[in-house]
Amino acid sequence: MSSYADRLAALREQLKADKLDGFVVPLTDEHMSEYVGTYAQRLAWLTGFQGSAGSAVVLPEEAAIFVDGRYTLQVRSQVSPTEWSYQSVPETSTTQWLEDHAPEGARIGYDPWLHTRDWVKKARQALASRGAELVPVERNPIDEIWTDRPEASKAHLVVQSDEYAGKSSAEKRTEIGDWLSKHHADAAVIPALDSIAWLFNVRGKDVHRTPVALAYALVHTDGTADLFVASEKVAPDVRQHLGNGVRLHERSEFESALAELKGKTVVVDPERAVAAIFDALEKAGAKILPLRDPTILPKALKNPAEIAGQKAAQTRDGTAIARFLHWIDEEAPKGEVDELIASDKLEALRREAPELRDLSFDSISGAGPNGAIVHYRSSEKTNRKLEKGTLYLIDSGGQYVDGTTDITRTVPIGEPTEEMRDRFTRVLKGHIAIATAVFPKGTRGSQLDSFARRPLWEAGLDYAHGTGHGVGSFLAVHEGPQRISPVGSAQSGGDEPLQAGMIISNEPGYYKTGEYGIRIENLVLVVPREIEGAEKEMLGFETLTFAPIDRRLIDVQMLDPEELIWLNCYHAHVLAKIGPTLSGSDLEWLRATCAPIGMPDE
Image: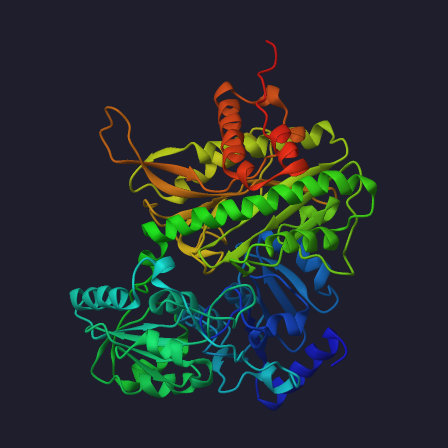
């Protein structure tokens, strides 16, 4: 179909044929993934929206698209206002909107393989107030009209060696089996793709930028497991790696396997398992224990091998970033560098490392006003040159065999304004506040979030995204359960106590619509902190990311002495870590960029 308007019209015709008065379209797949394979990108196909979080509702006479504050600008540039109304989350939601807009007595369709059980319950309650009905569909109506829909990936699984994983799959499965026994359960359903990759020490290429494979798993108390994955994707070396403790089945056999769990007590994660899984288990007569996926916390608590791998990946990545920032300094003022040229250059520098497997997400390469779009994606249509008097924001990362990186730097092209320097310095102060935070064990990310925002709040400013997200080990660049985010925000994803071994981002920002964006992002590791005389077990952060923070954007007079000490120490560490990997003009540039900054005269 030639236009998004045509696609919306075709969906409405299909809904009529299916005797439905509306349909809900989430941006996810059967595994509740944040990033999905091309075959599952129904929301993007229908609306044009390219963000990584959103949903839509289509009714006969109106349609709405729902995004949070990260995508407020992006959705308006990608989705037609004549066809769609823009709805802001968490101020509203699909269920609240349906309660206000669904026709009396309407039949609203949903795909039970794309929604959680909790969402289904809320939607049913919302619709009941209008005498409307929520109807599960056997086949997604978008799939009926998406005639050139891509097939699911057929890429082979690859083994993630114990050298990088730090623990064998058999050990992990035994620990999950013991956990099941303690909860008097017989099995756990594991539908999340990164959980499966971590548990079986395998990686895949089925999702853009995320090294996972399309699969489901059942883990049992004896440490054995059933893995449901297309047989064409499993080469002999992977079969040997999995061993006798893992029974292989076709992915298409997963639903029928659930039907065989009659009388069993089965753990299912309400946040990560779709409603169809609960429906199948209930129909089979299984007893359901609605508990969190037992791999989630062990996956977040990085072991020594994973931490060592992450540090090695960060040093490698820092080398590419330093060379890139030097290149930007030399080439951007000439007026020929644009967003796409810049992001391609950074990718090329990263790919010089043989350990790189992919980028960890599509780089956010935003010049001038495009930098104010939090999750901007440059295209031929939106591409801008890096012009003098503007800021350039580059948020990027790599998937290395031993670690996943994520870093944001903001660079002035030419001379920055005083306002830019003020805003940047406030963001830097917030970044330092997180980097230097010391807190008792049991502290949650939401308790730290305001540390990063205070310097902006003091000027009546803020940013509409979380301050930090968890990061995987050659896995998802966004990994729970830990977050640094306001409670109840669209990105909070829960409020998990921080524990030693968790990796999390530190990324406060500021965005002036139509002018510029600022973000400073490093990854940090939660570590124990020894404090003389402490009466509690204390934690803090060790910074893992090493790349210069642009001194031209810093108003030194706004920094406290302790903040300046942190900045100078950080740059000394950058030089010590990255300097030995550079030579020639790159090394000279790094030395100048990391030189200590003195306190201004009193």
